[in-house]
Length: 183
Image (tube, rainbow, N blue to C red; front, side):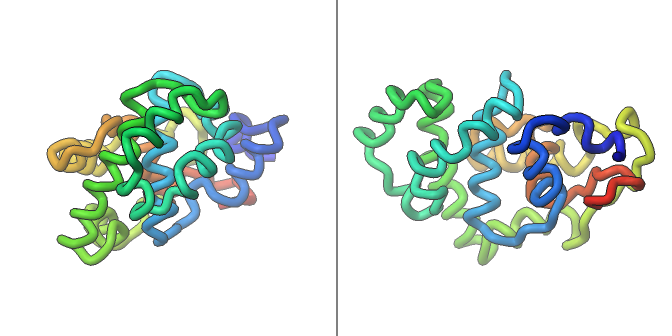
């Protein structure tokens, strides 16, 4: 098996993510929003922790429907602070609603969140054609530009490194190694 899968080996949830979702193009706004929120929740933590809490996040945040998250009340968000299935960080939990409202503004401006995001790459997937894990970057020119723009618009938890992981998560970046059968 390719070294590409080393970070997910032995964990069925991470293996499924690597094999079926990671670096696979997905143009669905709600999916992109979910990955934005999950990546934000992972700040300072491991992706494994977040992926093992994904179902709880989906249940708590209306399967990441942008419209429903934007309409969440203070009471609903406050309730999530006691949810043991989530990372109980007030800023991260409240950022879901805030980010949903910003994404709605982006949708109005660009027609979709997808159109906004893919505008940073001219509609093309970035494929590094890496041969070794050590070649895979943690940030890029695109992740830096997108991070800056999202921050300027008011989206939280989107530093350049998290934004790069987000780009991998939605398939704008393909960092599967050249010999990976899931490429």
